[in-house]
Length: 150
Image (cartoon, rainbow, N blue to C red; front, side, top):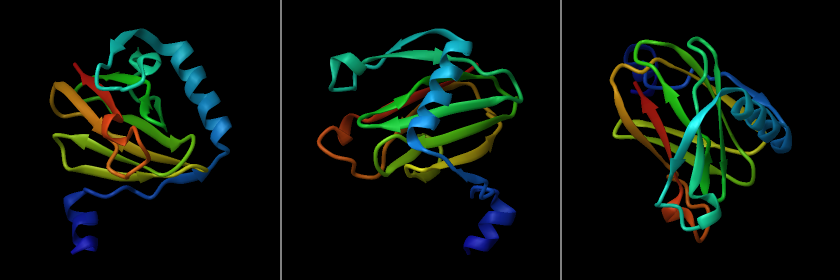
């Protein structure tokens, strides 16, 4: 059934991925945040008070957005627009994490050393929670992030 869902259901990644050093990907993410920051988001579910405030970043429609997984946070929060297409770059700074976008049925493994690119077009407005679904240590239960769609 997996080939069927890949072609007919369009539920699987296109397979676009590149090798990257974790520190280089984090630097790209920081550059993206500095250029596109539009606000902040208080994430009370994070157990580390130093990691509770996240920048909200809004990429240009049709542009690239970067999300870095690191113990125990998805960084940064994103603001996207309905009907616009974005190239979402995912990577991990430290170890394997899972990218699960709730309440949608979207799951993806994110590992250090790879820049996974997902092309996404939001179809509904709302606040979507990113959950890590690969056990990543003591703070795994609190590893969440946000995507706001307007």
